[in-house]
Length: 139
Image 1: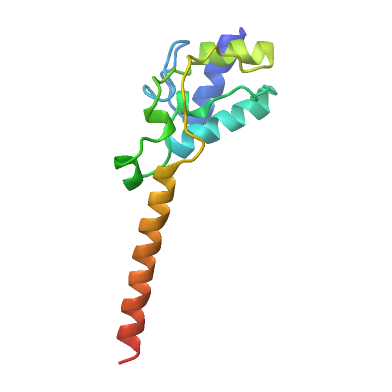
Image 2: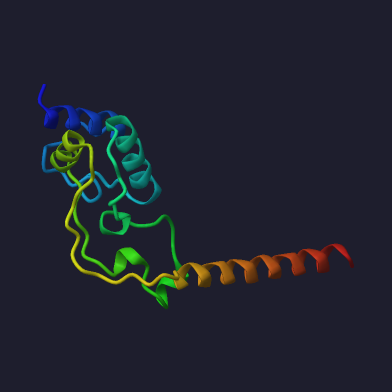
């Protein structure tokens, strides 16, 4: 079995999708997104012992859930053009035991303000819920 065939088999086993080709985009074509995509990459890296030190997640996937803060500050994955991850690409990195992509020049701010806004909104909602519960049970 070739390395690409082995990687296709790995993707099929992981996703349970039967129609996988060497150029299948794991994110778009298989709809493996958010935490599921990141978990897949983690399992892949462990199974094939791939050095992921140069891996930049935001070029390949997104984050889980809805980000209200993303309406004000773009998350990292919205600031770059997505690079597809395919079984063929994974096979190359597995053979070399290193994730190696020449990522385009880009700038991602050190602080992720969209997450801070999400945290503030969540805090305000929880505080409001707490006040409502206190008012309801102290009458």
